[in-house]
Length: 112
Image 1 (cartoon, rainbow, N blue to C red):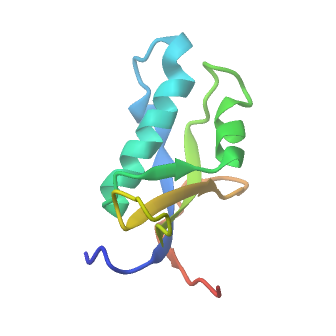
Image 2: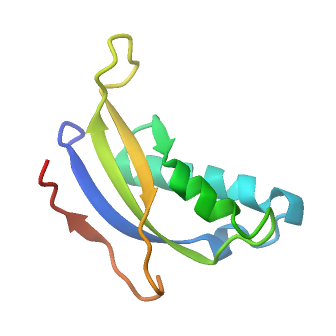
């Protein structure tokens, strides 16, 4: 995987297995950490930024009511800041679907 290219993919992440056995008061914060870890693994960048809509999606049912599966659109973009440590960053945003069950990873073509 070349880190030079800018790419956007849609993933389904199973948070249920990643949050199994986690204390109820730590489930939503742990979900945020797991999503960042997932994006780091799949995009190869340590700079991961979450969309505010994703944060609302995670926390809408409270600290312990995190959804079992989420559909995410993860984009690897160029970092335009002058003093950036990395050239690329990953931007994670939610994709609103009726059911995230059974959906596969899809490469999204950007028109921008």
